Image (tube, rainbow, N blue to C red; front, side, top):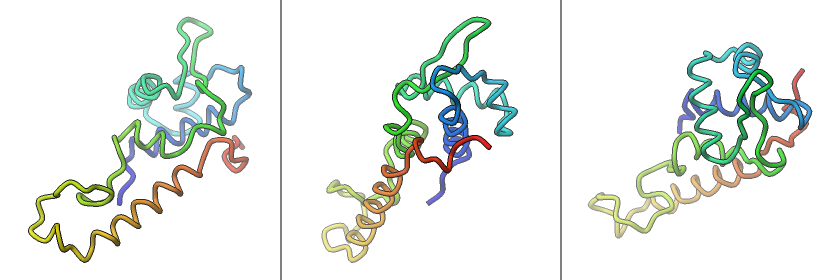
Length: 137
């Protein structure tokens, strides 16, 4: 399993925003500099997070980004799935749909992959931006 650079940057940007006072609006330039994220790529990521309902954006000179809901309610899974789509560690994991494997009906690995996926989803769901370890230094 590989978390993409896009998801990593999204998580880092949200950790930065969540570490600010709730009323503060963080600009793209501020976040990009603080988290060493390429500005243009960050702009695209923040737009997707806004579309997903995770962020609110504000236009104008005093504009920027804020969390759209309390930081404790935004899970890492929410962010990864906003960036990548539904989490899928293996083609047949978590699905009763035939993955095309000739052994689908008698696959010795399906149960294992289902457990891996469930475990990863639980871990990413439990991790949220209310965690004090994520506060800006």
